[in-house]
Length: 516
Image (tube, rainbow, N blue to C red):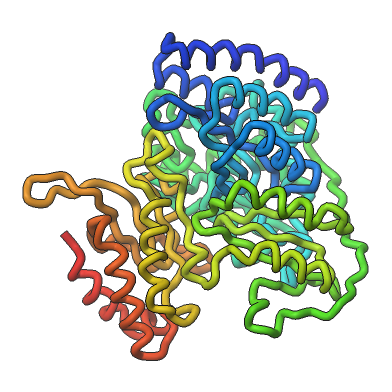
């Protein structure tokens, strides 16, 4: 691994050179994007600033990495930070000099941005409370971290057709979407994995193909290498639009794909020794202090499977906290034993291994976050920043929440929603109870900002489904739609889930008023 990291450091000179050329207008946006993505950076819309994606395997943000984020924000005056649905942290509005310097300094904090974008293995995702969650099948984090290290070694060794997303789920909650990623490992009660591959969200979404059952955790690298070999052999190198793993289901057929994958798996097993012995690191911290979770104001506190310890949830609206919040958080948890942060695929972060007294302090410093389920809604960074985005997801979410707050609905009257600025599903709109993706609608011969409405998606294992597309709503009408929806549900003294389950037609009747 040290050799790989040294090679990555040597590559930074190339990144600096290309970045300087881009800001000097000597290379095109397209050319720069094709290069810079492999370093975890993209130019933002307009080409006058950059973003940088900090790769955090398993969504783990320990105190050293948190301190690096705090110091970077202070030193470079960073004002916009985003928690992503791929369990990473993104810095935005960076100058050419800043993005290069932060990328280089990140190595000293154990943060590698290489492969954070572009046609590379991406950040390995994990159920955020793995190792501490009550009811989990087993702690999958050690195996995910082993896979992350392995994939870092593949970044310069293999040319993939497009990006490859790998994840590990510790329970049927399936938070990282193991059953419909490029490669997903879904834990079983027996301490094994079922393996799914060639799935994904976005254009032409696909559920994953189950290619193996009851796989020993020690063998996960064989399945990762087989996925890489299958993608290289059968992935589409000619058309970027069809260069994701899910299109192999289309080109080979589901059974043909499974056969091809298993053939590659046998070849890997016959030629390589990839068995691993990842050690779990059980939490040894003793719990103490009274748990305040019974109180209504403490609903963000989650008892861990370790007696007397808790996880605290914090969801800044849109996954965009105030940049100054990182310093407040660091100063709060700096001296707390074994406390670390876990990023979740829904833009929530969790503080784990808190005793009762520590939990009180963390809850206090994060009191500015979402106040109810609806305010934990998910939104990608949006078209105000993203080159390919069509609509400002962050902006529209803020307007909806501003309108809904006027009615003071009870928690659960409105569900969490998922908003993507385009069809790419960075806001995971396809698996939301209610989801939206950005587009354009012509009204009276004029193009209007609009969103396509998706209904009744689910990511829970065994209940996976992509939401149905019901129609398009104008962006300006979304706050009014949610206000009317909330009033209808509240009038029946129900939560949205029970209200919709009883009669989906009631939602359709309201929504149709807003369709164009």
